[in-house]
Image (cartoon, rainbow, N blue to C red; front, top):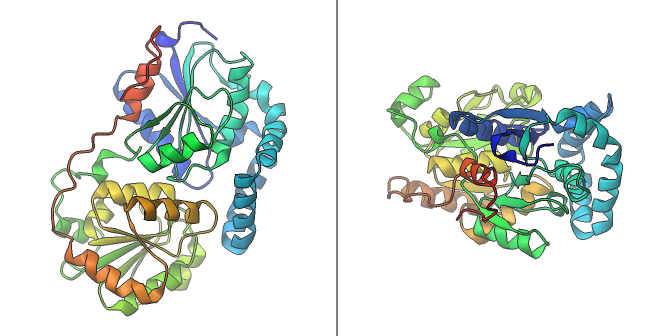
Amino acid sequence: MRNEPAAGRIVVVSADIGAGHDAAAAELARRLLRQGRQVDRLNFLSLLPRPLDATVRETYRGMLRWLPWCYEALFNATGRSSVSVELLRAALRPAVRRMLGRLPPDTGAVVTTFPFANQLLGPMRSAGLISAPLVTYVTDFAVHPTWIAPGVDLYCVVHELSRQQAAAAGADPVQVVRPLVNARFAAPPGLTTRAARRHFGLPERGRLALIVAGSWGMGDVARTATEVLATGCAEPVVVCGRNQRLYRRLRRFPGHVLGWVDDMATLMRAADVVVENAGGLTCQEALASGRPTITYRPIAGHGRANADLLSRSALTSYIDSAQRLRPALAALLAQVDSGDAGADVRVDMATVVAEVLRPPRWGWPG
């Protein structure tokens, strides 16, 4: 490693488990490349020996789909006990050599968007195996203890309550930043709601409720769609992601059912309200789009943790029963055209990384 990282490249470490970690990494890389930086992307799961990489991914997917109670218990157990995080850290030690082999000699900074990466890279940084600063971007609103590790130089979160939660768990320092979502979610250039609806073959008149459940289409999606339809407030538009089983199940649903969508920014522009289940990325995209957002039937583990923080922050309306869904939808739809949320004054994540690359000063922006 070089001792002067200003001229070095930035290595962004994510994981292809769901879409949120990779999407945040891709957006950060896009912003840094636009600044003229050198950026490498690294999939953390590729450091694991085969078939362990696929086993981790599919076990996680299987628990969310078939055994959500098991994932909930595991999520809560690792959140309460420091021993479980230490065991995870120990289990990842054999990957140290592989990680060192994947970091170029001119690495100037390492940025993670996946919590397990911190449990490997943080101790490596503490031990002096990595001289470049280590920064993490927390993709969820709730900061689970697996994000926090010795050796991390800076934690970046998207809300003040997230900062407080991270600090209480021992993270230091913590910076509040703008979410790593594409700028098109905030203001798709020259795109009206009517044009967005035409693009997806949706009705140009009437109210539409967009139901999103991440790239895997996890959670009680079919039940949510049925209950939204039953309110009579809006027609459901359901995004199944890559969940073909869900798509086949809903293909005769009286609302509008979509599979994988490449252009979520345009689809959100077509909707009047978004109903999400507290996945980090989809919720951040919905909030960036300015569409009123309901958190409903959150998925287990991080979904419920995110929902709790979102409820306390009032960023979304957290609805915990079908009886409350209709009045909540009606109230939000009445506010659709009520005004502008104002400018986002949080610092840009790419600016934070650029500041880290600027020696010898180590003062965090903001």
